[in-house]
Image 1 (cartoon, protein in one colour):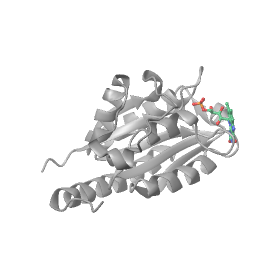
Image 2 (image 1 turned 60 degrees about the vertical axis):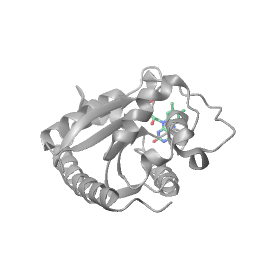
Image 3 (image 1 turned 180 degrees about the vertical axis):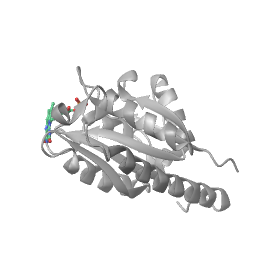
Image 4 (image 1 turned 135 degrees about the vertical axis):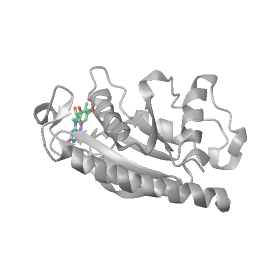
Length: 197
Ligand SMILES: Cc1cc2nc3c(=O)[nH]c(=O)nc-3n(C[C@H](O)[C@H](O)[C@H](O)COP(=O)(O)O)c2cc1C
C-alpha cells in the first residue's frame, strides 16, 4: 500500500474578504513539508452548495444520494481522502454555515477517516467552532484527533501569511505526524474490513 496519504484541507469559510485561504495556504505548506501526504486544498467558495437537501438522507441513500452536478468535484475529493484538516473560523460561537452544508451533503465520505482542525477567529480563536465540529463528525463516524491549532486574533497574530508564533510550525508538524499515523491506521483497517454500517 502506498505510504503517502491523500490529505484534503478544507477551507470552511466563503465570506467576502475572508482569512480562510491565507490560513489554509500556510497549513498546506506545512503538510507538504511533512512529506507523508499528497495535499489537496478544497475551497468551499469554489462550489455552489445548496442549503436545501433532498428528501432522502445521505445516510439512507448511500451511493445513490442525488447531489447537484456542481458538487461532483467536492464529493470526489472527500471520497478519495485518507485524512482531513478543516480550516475553520468561528462565527457566533460555532463554525460557518458553508462548512455545515458541505458536511451534510455527505456521509460515507467521512466514515472511519481522521479529521484535524485548524481554527482561528477573534478572542475565541475558533475553540467553540471546533467543539461543535467534533460533535457533528462523531455522528458521521469520522475520527477527530486530539491535536489542533488555534489562532486567536489572527488580525494581529499573523503577518504576511504566517503566524508570528515561532512555535506554530513545530505544533503543525506534531499534528501532521499524528494525523498521518491515524490516516495509515484507518486506511489499513478500512481495506482489511469494511466499516460496519
Ligand atoms: C458573523 C461573524 C461572527 C463572528 N463570531 C465570532 C465569535 O463568536 N468568536 C470569535 O472569536 N470570533 C468571531 N468572529 C470573528 C471571525 O472569526 C473572524 O472575523 C474571522 O476572520 C472570520 O473568518 P473568515 O475571515 O475566514 O471569514 C465573527 C465574525 C463574523 C463575520
